[in-house]
Length: 313
Image (tube, rainbow, N blue to C red; front, side, top):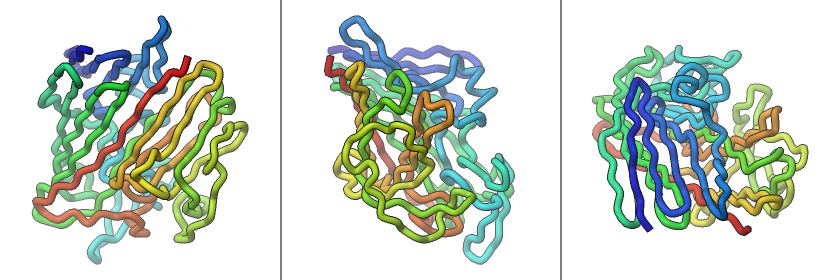
């Protein structure tokens, strides 16, 4: 088995990892995953609902935030306001209604700093320095994201965050990919390693209550179920969730690891794909403190999640 890394330079560089039966396409703009493709028996299946081109991603990332890197906060912050260490801050970057959403780096121009391939894997590392660019988040941190494609059609996203300033800072980390396994998501089988969900208010932020929820604790079809919820994983040593298509035999398994104890799931109205988001903390964590990381100056924080593809036919 051989692996390779190719680079397509330009205003918006594209990096492609390839090996075995799978490929992954990463856009440097936003460090987003635009394709994860399995080829087997003469058929190719891209399980990422991505963009037609890097330019389209640059122009339309806020229309759904497909595959966005969620940093330094995930999901929503009520009113874009929060209090940290007795000081109030007001975010400015992007709002949906009254809520600031999906962080500050979803369109950041990451730099490719290294890439390599061996007989067993291929990887690319992208980095970005955030330096107080939004008045509502006047802190400095360095982000290092590494995509690694390895055997058995496994793609791992490793994220490292270092507080490069002289102040402590609030932090949550996440990803926002939309997955498609072919056809309507109603027809897909889904199971999650969870029995609890955070109760949301009408603004889709936690109330502080935790509710029992075993809707997808055992595998069954999504059908017409609508989801826009944040689930608490039971055991991060086991798969966070499994999504499969009986019609074509395609299966996606997501491992979150202990750095991502929350799983946000969203079923968009078009029902062509499903957002499955690994999160280190809950929506509005800057206010409610659920999963909030208080990052100290000079400290390094690491996160990892992986996606594995399998075709049974």
